[in-house]
Every structure is written in structure tokens, then in C-alpha cells.
Length: 127
Image (cartoon, rainbow, N blue to C red):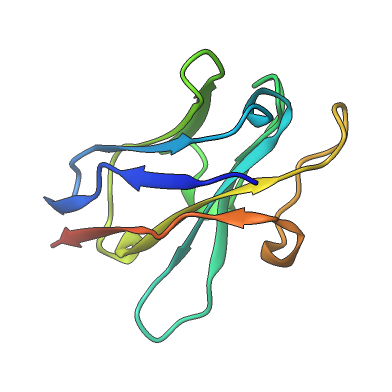
């Protein structure tokens, strides 16, 4: 079992930055791939970024490449999403999720592959 708690969301203006955090419970965090997803009003949930257990492999949604960075601190059982140059279209509820794939496996972008989910944190970007 793993519990995930997101924090760091808020209301910002276009061009601003935010850093989301996701604190995980459970001893398996350091061997678990992690991902961030988002759901905008009236839209389907979409993949944003993922990171493997070591932090060496990452994957991003094309529209956030160069603006968002996913990272992790296994000593703190925490995964982060640094979001820079935010745009109104980034407005959504952001969720972190855990994918218990084997070490060395390629990180995945499909929500149904993830095993555990947080409750979400709202990010609102005004123009």
C-alpha cells in the first residue's frame, strides 16, 4: 500500500512558477516509478510527466517540455513537479501517481497503469 499527498497548488498569473510536491508513505517509494497527471475542467485526465525509481529516466507531455521538470528525493519519499512559465491552459487539478514497474523498465504515460493516486491539488493560472 502507498498513500500519496500532493501540495503546492495555487492561483498564479501567466508566466509565474509553482512547485508541486507529492509526499508518499510506504517503504517501496524508492523503487517505484512516479508520475504526474492533470485534469482540466471538461477534459480527460492527461499525462504530464513521469520519473523512474532512480530519477535517471523521465518523460514529459510535449506541451510542457522545457517548462516543467519532474524530480524526486528518495530520502524524503517525495516527488516534485517544478512548473515554470505557466500558461492559462495549464489550469487543472494535478495528481501524482505511483507505478510499481520493475527497476529498469521504461516509465509509462497511461493512467490505467498506475497503482496508487493522490487526491489532487488545484493549479489555476490567470491570464
